[in-house]
Image 1 (tube, rainbow, N blue to C red):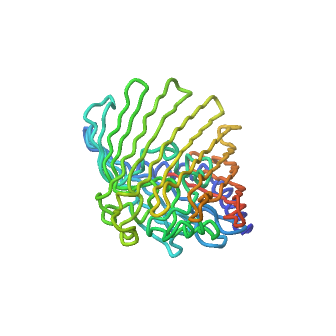
Image 2: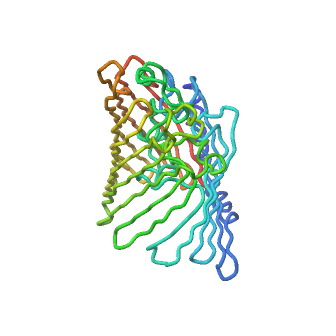
Image 3: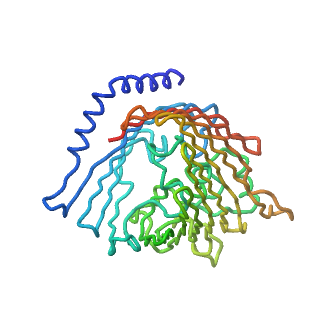
Length: 408
């Protein structure tokens, strides 16, 4: 694996060594991938990211990294942005990789992660409505999640730490639910609080006015739903989730906001395992969040906190609190470093024997990263993470990763 990391760094240096030729070629590519009709009524741009990642894990991989060994993870992301006049906009995102999450599908996968149509009746941005499949409005990290803007390679703990909550079957007993703490993460059936960008399907309304911004969405599945449940053809809107965010930007340095989400997290296949007299709508996920960001010269700081409640059949309310604080510093216009502290705490539930126990293991993780932007189109990053769970099983205690990104 160290050889792979070295090879990835060597590739980045070789690409950086041909920076002038690369810049000229990519600029020609940018020009070739743009179209504007006479008069400018129709405009379209095709852009993309090519990511090559390498992961080294000393134990089971953490978060939403799948498999049990070191590996390389290539990814191609294409974005088609189209405008019709000043009122209509559409976006299509296509990805080819080894699964939405690293190595989720080892043999490769290709799919449309986003597709939406947006109408903005007023040019001042006070109101827009869009429909399709797109990222959640909950929280703030999603707005800077892609490999070019995220200082790290992985997501914060709140967006990728798999808990013992499942969406596919109800637990048979309270003791059975608590026993999940003693086995490694079952990523095929368990859920985080928010599954990454949560590209669920639905409708949203959003806008901004006088330093304030708002966004409301109605989606087919919860913000914790797995990627296979995001498409409307997979899960319809019979049990929708409503999410919102309200934000304020008092000046150029600060932004803060609050978010909320409420809806059914169980998938239809769980219906047959529920207690008699209960349906999927009887068990909800309710999540509240707050976020804040600050920037000044070379410094950038972000923070988010969330409290989530899962109503678990035969168990009761399973509550958890998670947060992260992230700092990035730019030493030069090209070189940066970042540190992120993450933590997640779990409340207690009845254990079936007259007592109560924490329903999952408390966890903390520290992420460190360094990155270098060789050109306007080429960036490299290294990340080291240390994670510790309050229990006998560690899920990826140490992680070393490298990422090379080409932007066009």
